[in-house]
Image 1 (cartoon, rainbow, N blue to C red):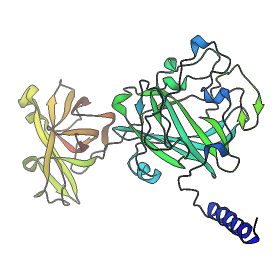
Image 2: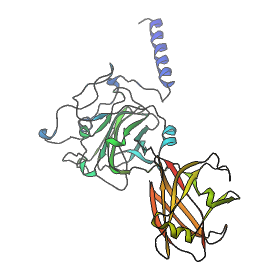
Image 3: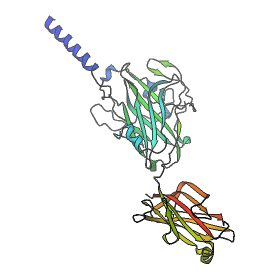
Length: 383
């Protein structure tokens, strides 16, 4: 071989080395499949190693081929998920309550290759997979539903092909992270079990890892154990419960006030009624408006959102009933009352787990001629 030709090959090899080192790890990778460590039969058949042929269905399911690098498999009954494009900070800005984050671990050696974060808003479940440095997700399988419905082989390994949600980022490539959006209406459970699996490719070692979200409170035994090359077997910890987080309603303050029977001082609204007047009205009682958006004591721009009614329940008790108009709900009520002007030390309050449109309670009739009320509610609009 001529020296010039050999020199050209050397320069080209050096260029390829430097080019591969300059890649951003967040970029999608493409590998020549012949350069990758092939999966063992155990991993390739999704945990069906050692099973009778009758228990192993032919073929491996995956999405239809979408590129020259993708494989095509038999189609099973599942929902195909695609990355939403949402970043974790986007999900955090709309989620309700707390997220649940678990590490993606490989086998009983608990080799960490990434993590899974689950959260929800009022309509959707958000499941975010993120691979660690130099690692890429190549497949994602999710089981979401009743704990008793998790499909397993007889040897203890979950039947990934029967999971109800799956995603296939790339076959010869992979993704660093992806958020999948699943409508809560498709799950229709307040609490449910999740099995989160990903086949993760390690760019440095050129290994594939079968990784599950780790839940230290539950161990699912697997009957085949051992260690070989890239693969960790033995016991797996792979199932966790998630309960839909309640979305706190955005509630605004409403004030109880009746212009003809009330007054406002120092931005405090008071309404007073004579017991004799309440008695004359009988069961019908008397309505006091609930208003929002007052500018101090100026109610010219206020909105009436409902009322509470004061009625005689007996000679010694009064019935107080709150009711809001159509399109509104109450998050909580706060009813303060007393026997003299601007002195309402007695209180009845209630915070509702789920917003309501009506609520009633009874209080003792205080001694004296009148009842003074400094009361209100927190109101939210309905969807």
